[in-house]
Length: 443
Ligand SMILES: Nc1nc2c(ncn2[C@@H]2O[C@H](COP(=O)(O)OP(=O)(O)O)[C@@H](O)[C@H]2O)c(=O)[nH]1
Ligand SMILES: [Mg+2]
Image (spheres, rainbow, N blue to C red):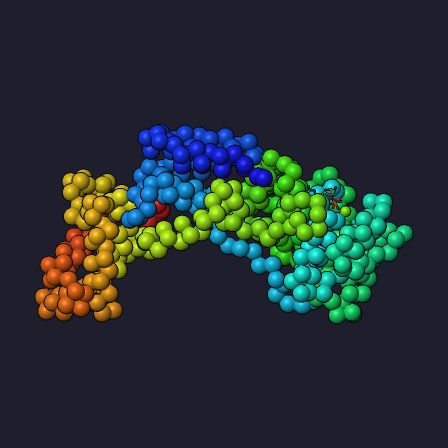
């Protein structure tokens, strides 16, 4: 299993009775070691662990979430980003028929993967055909033929013929005429240099015009996968990537993160020699497994529900003085101990320390219920134009929310405070410019 040690480190952290800061620091150190061992790029490792540490120590967990659960969530989020983010790859072809061509260095696992893919799609209900267009390796046809039998998928080949492009064309036509849904072409990839590989790939692709080209990469090359994936990603608009042999190397983490960093999509990963050892690559699920936490999704869901993000757009609105009640509410309940605006405001001399809308985080949970009720009984117009909320409206809102008028007033005071600060901020041109250039990180 890839990054096995992370799980052990996390469970040590969870059992630890050390002081929180110490425990976080120790965990982060171990995580660092594990990622480096897995051949993840060292700069990336340091950035990642620095961010985890900062978030773990500076951000306050949402109401009702323990600090330990909070750290798990942060680690989960940051690792998920490292391996490609939340998006899951689209593995169903957008139309039929669909022609896939596999390319990759010799020994990377193309032929095995071709059969695995055929088997996978067959189980999804597609009619799949395999084309043996590797004319270089002796017995390449027999190898694919055997694997095809295991998968229960027909294989087209022309043993003895050595024009790979012709075979690819013939085989594709053969299956198209029979009305097959997905045609998978296995190629030679007899290269040791990526330039040669990419050139041959272009040659075959020009002739056969596949709908999708999949680059097969052996996980054992670790972070070196970056350069080949990047070139492939740039030159192939219809490309995706499969990483093989994740079961057989410690460097899988490096290969996966390197490919993810290029922006290319990793569709599947190979996790063994058997025909069914192919998995759709979903970074969140992969990370959950690394962390060894079955219910990570439940935990993250729970945290998402109480977590309200202060987005860049919100900051823009604040800076521009467009203060709505939605913004006030977000600022109040947002996760960071003192709200994201504190970061900006602390740079303005004189007001840094006594901001009216800093509320004791321990009180947030209790107050949040009231605020939600108040916000919910405002009309859309009132939410967007809080200035129209006079005494009479306050009474109505309070009645609707089942709270006292004083509670509504308190929320309105937050609004006025925010508005005033926005105005003060706009007088500080230097800060404004930095903010607008994105040089102040609010996350
Ligand atoms: N452990 C493991 N071995 C694999 C995997 N994929 C392929 N292999 C093995 O890697 C070797 C080369 O595979 P092959 O498909 O012939 O590579 P090709 O030269 O690119 O066609 C074979 O021994 C395969 O069994 C995998 O996901 N895990
Ligand atoms: Mg092969």
